[in-house]
Length: 146
Image 1 (cartoon, one colour):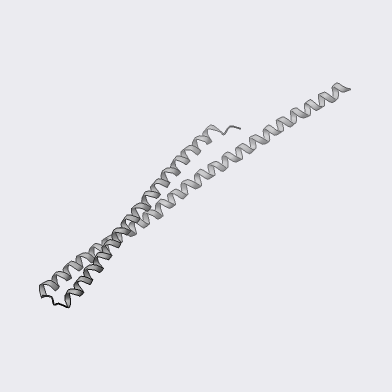
Image 2 (spheres, one colour):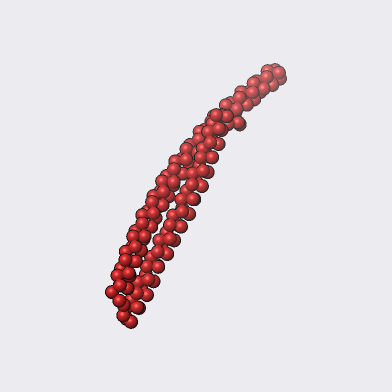
């Protein structure tokens, strides 16, 4: 049984939208992973720099060296805080894209359900037609034999 052309068009559009939403979700996930890696690198660099400073403290450090360390750590902390905001934004984008994909998928599935229902209705009609033809044929055969 053929699907209603309008419904078939809607299913195709919904499928295209679902595929596009899935691609956007994949891109958002990859972007979030990248931002998390950058944050991890910044945190690791901060820890290594602080460890080197602590090692250098044992041999002594000038006041200017200590001030430079403090200023650099402040800049690093600012960069880390900025990267944390970027990570949070990326995570929110994943949530938004996942919601959009789920909405597209629900729409596509609902059109599929409508198509299935329409197909079942058409099958029932065809079965009734076939049954009617068979009944008429049987009636003719019975009348013919008499």
